[in-house]
Length: 523
Image (cartoon, rainbow, N blue to C red; front, side, top):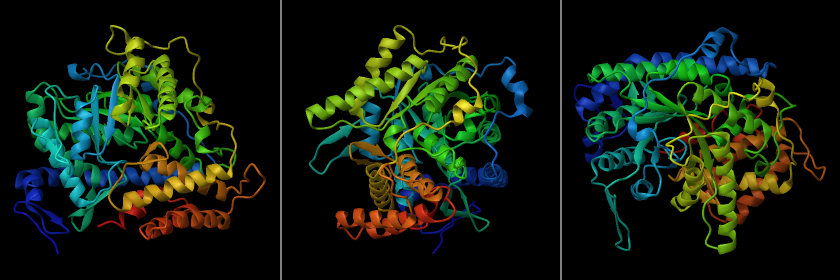
């Protein structure tokens, strides 16, 4: 059954509820339809270019700095003005646009909350709509939540600055069709958030601020530049009203940071080290390179040279252009056991200290319980400053491509294999049942960390690796361990997750994103 509202060329794959219609007004639909009509074709071209690049990498080439854009990298220029309420971003918290989560995050001792429609949200229709409605109420200061026990949650008078992460270029919104095809998920997220919130945000001295994920090139953010400019013109707003931070979370993008900043220079305020997706992208991009195999996940820390080089290059590139260099996510979460919790806090301190010492302007956490710990590190580093834009790293030796491409050493163990299987299996079950962000074994796991787990397994099978005890990693051995882990969970809900897990780890061809086959399994 489909439903179409007046003045719209969009078709919805299910009837629209009352809340749906509050958000998908004829005017909002007209705006969304304009975006889809103007920008869908270019999105398809950009996705095709991704496939072409990957074919070159699969044939033996390595990512590199583009000789055709050397003039952008070597010339002097700076990005546009950064809004006052984004000048201090020393600690940011992220999470899905769940009502209770949004209130707790905006009330936390942080500077920014990034509401995430991508890695930590299962894109079920009701969750997308509820998420947009939640943010609409948050912007207006009317958001509240009452728990089952009667506890009332409300926003404080001065909440953190709100930013919205839209879905990546590769993700569709299958519940909305244009000319018979699913529309781009990122356009859906952007259109509804901007349409309903830009005016009230601007009226209180803030603005429509976005995070852009999974970009691979300057060309891809140029697509967003045109979307932002089109939107500003349509609503008679000055150029640069819309602001964005771009996640550098793909291996190709680390070689395009200057180009990304340049192409989005009127709208960009910074880049972010999306470390978990970056590790996943390293595996995926270099999937046919048998000399670039990564070890157990726990060994791949930001202290490893290839990741430290990525962090330092991002700081140097951003600060040269007047843009923020945001640090990455600590996936650890507080523990109830006092000894374990102190261990967690110490690991978080060390992680954030490394970022502060490298010159990052701020960092990410996934849990309000870590806010004070992360804030203390950056308060000490910043002193009276709002950020570290003055840290230019001009005396650093150049970071060459090989430094970014050399994998780290480490063991591949049965314990590491089973941890990967367990994390991916439990996360997939949660994702398929509507929860895109879930605590597992003391870590807050989302799609990015699950991607590392499953692509590591695929990589070890594909390149015929052996474990530290000498046993070969084969599809059969992985499926045997998967069956054992599945049996320990003893719940039929995990059947679909186990089948999907078997598919994405043992197929000859690496599945690009686990959310693509997963999306077909949700309503």
